[in-house]
Amino acid sequence: MKYSITGKLTAIMLSIVAGTVLLCWFINTSLLEPYYVKDKQQKLLDTFEMVNSVSMSEEGWTEEFAIRLEKQCSNSNITRMIISSDSTIIDSNVGDNETLLLQFLELVFRKDKNAETLLNTEQYMVEKTTDKRLKTEYLVLLGNLPDGNFLLMRTALESIKESVDIANRFLAYVGVTAVILCAVIIYAVTRRITNPILQLAEISSRMTNLDFDAKFQSKGKNEIDILGEHMNQLSETLEQTISELKSANNELKRDIEKKTEIDEMRKEFISNVSHELKTPIALIQGYAEGLKECINDDADSREFYCDVIMDEADKMNQLVKNLLTLNQLESGSDQIVFERFDLIEVIRGVINATAILREQSGIALQMHGNEPLYVWADEFKTEQVLTNYISNAIHYASGEKRIEIFVRPKTETVRVEVFNTGNHIPEEELEHIWDKFYKVDKARTREYGGNGIGLSIVKAIMDSFHRECGVSNEENGVKFWFELDCRSQ
Image (cartoon, rainbow, N blue to C red; front, side, top):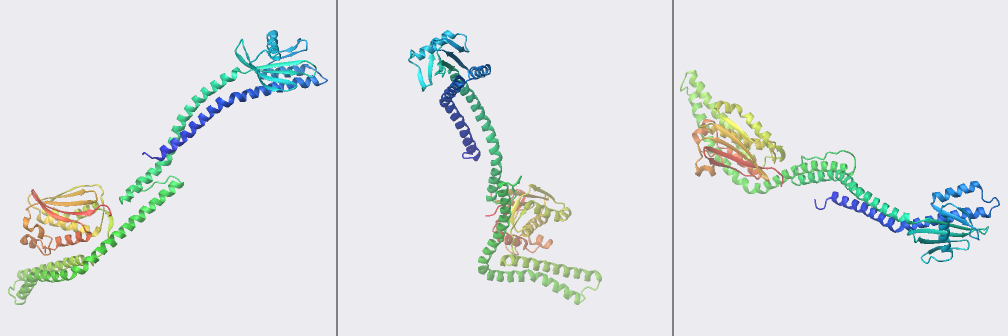
């Protein structure tokens, strides 16, 4: 990611670490040597004060003081020499006294023009000079003692430059190592912080597509975990709200269309009912009159007449029920409840419910698509559509007597197709099969008790969903289909 938090935090922290290392290197290079010189100068002054105080005391030079002075000079790497006014060496801690004495005398008589005076008082003078023979820098103190003797001390400064170079090289190695280790540690730490944030980003992205199954897995009680829990609550609330909005929106659309269609539907309903009830009423009336007039006195005939009357009455009852269902759908008085459910589970339920009919007719059924697939619709009415399609397929299947169900997901919708082998529907009648009471094969429809309303109910349900349904002739059969929302809009 171009602007990831991990990259930014890593870059910032590495910049701080690298900047700190560079600052330390700069301070080490520019300030360490002057600090070292100042420290050496202070040690020379401290040693001078030790000797000066002994020269002023009544006890004088004792063995205990000599040991203490030797320790001080050894720890501070100081070369000393005490000489009298006639150049006699009274005390020294070097082997080559004459050479050191000549070097001191050069300073005393200002023969070394390159010497730099650092301090100059009545008691002592501190200078920075260079040994011409060894090409080595020294810090030299020339002091007058109260007893008339001279104290000459020097300490080498050359080692500080080497120390600075070594320290800088070491600091460079440590700095590079520190930057690499910090990069690894910072990256690992920031990933632990950003991974939950990325998880929340993925969940929010899925929520924009109205996929509310993803939930944040909380592992603690920090700020990100609290945000994740609130995201989970938001997901649940949105799912419920969208379901309510879908239902409300669907109801509003129905209300708008309701007033313009209700009169026409009532007239058409009365006309179709009158037509459909005319035949069974006539049959019931005829057979009832036959029973009354005792046309046939034998028991078998009377039982046959009663069976016909009961069968026609049952068909009328079924017709009335279907008409009431259709009327409720078309008038908008039937409540449509949109909810999110697994379409595959509903299809399997209908398949199991129609298993006995298939077995009686010797029909094989195959379903394509077994993975859970969630849609937005009225679950009960979706089951009605599937039941009508599969029942029609069972009644009209011929030839191979095979039914296939296909579930084809798209970007925003899912198409369900029910195919059965058998005779084609005439092309000129394809557009009319959704009309109420329309029958392609009236003899076949009458045989299994159909009344031409099943597909009208399917069409009314799909119109209430504001989704499409259709039919087409295939190579060796007929395919009915319908579509449902797979995400809210």
